[in-house]
Image 1 (spheres, helix red, strand yellow):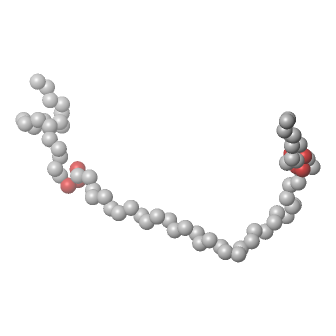
Image 2 (cartoon, helix red, strand yellow; image 1 turned 180 degrees about the vertical axis):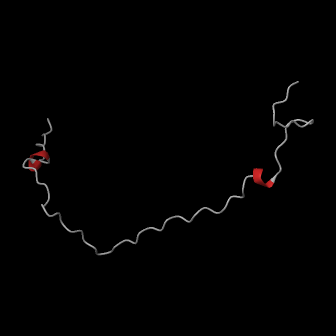
Image 3 (cartoon, one colour; image 1 turned 90 degrees about the horizontal axis):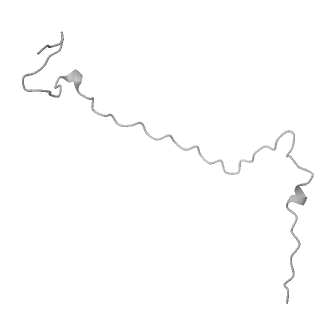
Length: 72
């Protein structure tokens, strides 16, 4: 049976390393959640410099369809 150079095989078999540098460190506490921005009461938004977009056919798009009369 050949053993690779530098490899160490225990007679008992495989085992978990017990040295300090091989252990997983203890988990620290996660950072706190970010704070929410305060809600600005009464703060109004500034209207855009170029104004709002007004398409010429917007009224046609939202026009009411003619109501149908019941057949009786």
